Length: 463
Image (cartoon, rainbow, N blue to C red):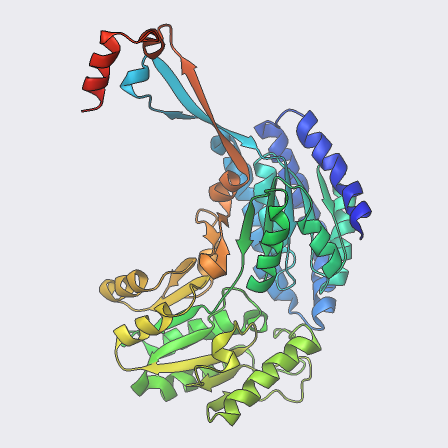
């Protein structure tokens, strides 16, 4: 789509956001119910489109990791939106009494949402749920790497929603650049840090506030006290779902050095139980494009050439799928340790003391997620105090993102701002301050002309 096409889509949203009074709770719940019907009534089409785009995406993963949390997020918003919309009373300083003050949560206007390819449904519907709950209009830009799903989503939105409430813009990188430069009232982008910088620059021309959900190298700490097999199973689960193409997947694991080989064996055993075969396994997803597969292959070749030990399950001749792979103690200057991996390749790094592991992770850019496996609260606290991240799951992986009562977002290079549930409602709302003067305005009566009373009041209040 070119600039004129996008302006044509944007214009009715913008006009409606300025001309129509803010929707009440009943209307917002109706919008959300329409969104839920869009998903529920088209599950099989959605699943098949995503499978085709990936060249092999587990249908059950799409149902469990995208459809289910999307529907539950909508249901959560429907249940709570009326409470979220209530005015919030704020205290008034004694100087201005008698009076009252409160906050009104009002729609921002038109929200732009740029969604990625790795979870194309959830990362479109999730922020859209929060935008609609906050009473906004919205415009979606799904990824060009999932063209079948993107076209399906555009068709479904046009069928279920009016063009002045919700619309979808499809297209490639050029479309995304123009989309980012539209005068949205808020823009949410999910994707890579590099592209996030471009989106923020484009949005700056209109002073459009942005929420950036990026990524980074999310560490997993395995403490000496934690059962090795239990940690290995949880990490294998979080890493190899969607073939590692998850923004909060464990990106590397810090393991007591003496247990490194045993841990590697346990991770591969856990992966083998979950995926007995790779080629032809409908439960194991493909890496989305040849370019992404080649990047991972080059990173593994680089690690091998530098002397790192590489261990993997048998791929069975699969071409679009990369088998679960471990890299033990990769060089710190290798691509695997410089960039987010975004695939089923997991570096394991040995440490001698927990403080050493904490220092290792803390010296790197702040990640989107952090995982810590320990039964000791003191150890968990040391890790949480020592390494900052967007979110955390303790003694498991991924599950913090599924909590509708917790915000989801990054920090620094892993993101800016957060959404989900009430935090998402607030993210896409304007907290409008309202002050109501009481029957007597004491502050106003003190002057000017300023009198001795005003000076005495100053002396008393400034103490």
